[in-house]
Length: 249
Length: 251
Image 1 (spheres, rainbow over the protein chains, first blue to last red):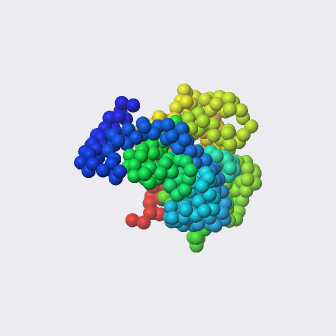
Image 2: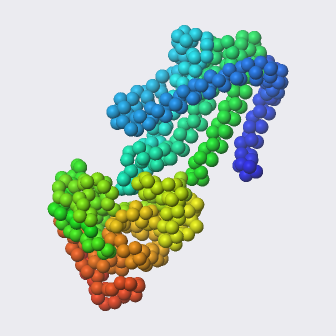
Image 3: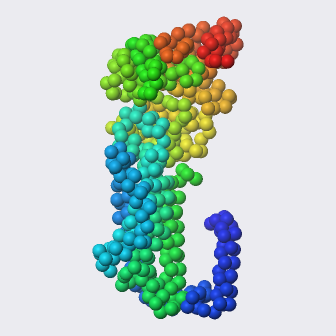
């Protein structure tokens, strides 16, 4: 723990310097509706703690969790399917890669038209942003599995599912965790975008409402909360990874 | 124990058969080394026996049974130890039992422990492969090969990546294991001295495509120690083998 703190010391000092520069710059500018100071944001966060923590944070988190859960389930299933069947791979892989070029934010408003202001239009944005990176990363993990180890198992009489279980899954595990670490912040962004476009609750919605009221600190407060939540979630995934992928040191 | 009968094999995309109507046989309980220059097709012979490749024509029999029948028939130990880094050494050694099935987890652990004791790695079951030295890893890989329960063992340059002292120590150790377990061992190497020290007779690959293996008996009785390599007849045989192999390497 001490070592980790020491390793991050330069980054922490730099961050502190940035925040101080921000505080100084914002105080000089003196226009809180455009650029609030960090201190004002913290004050706002405290002031609005009631609605932020009991209504909007849970709303955004449920969108994130459901979206991420669905993406993980179908992304993993598709990755396994593409690995097992060359036909499925040939059929879908180019489409999956090409679909990454779709600018999600521009078609997201359509989802609101299709699915309304409820939770599902936001979940769909989240899924659209996270599904393909998860699929491709995990699939690449299966591809990168050690061929010699699989051959060794074949000489022991292992079948394709056994080599999949004994070699491919462990080899793909680090890739899986990379995918999740990448997908967690993306899913939070997806949920926030969805809420910006049209919602009745959620941190994205709240931030936008504050914008219409020209409340600079109020716009930033939910954003800070979003970042902190995403960081905490990535931290938890990292802890899990360290526990499950010990051999990587 | 092992019999090749007019076996031919051709890699896809090549215009010649790397193994061309090859016939040879190996008696039960013997220790043969196959020597040949790099890329001559030695490993292809092993891959045909362990079923990773299928011959174009001909029959390979192990213990009288054709290998095309799809049954496991040999213990294969590749050049790299291929210990799975996410499993403990004990779990690695138990892999053949796990794949074969019919063995409880406890029984597997017991047999892996016994196999590790047998190769001088008692108490290493719970360690991760990364904690072992190169020589210890090869011994663990050998214990894993032993647990395939097969009479025929195919060892493909298992010591080539080790330093000199570890290598000669493991050569002596391997001979002792062979004499104790009475397995049939085929051992690929390009190190002529290693071949002479280990085998009852050396099978030389004289040309590619491989049409025959030239069997040369080693004039030294078992048990052996390294001093036998200094004898005049062994030194002379070594020179002869080196000369045979050098003819195939373009200057």
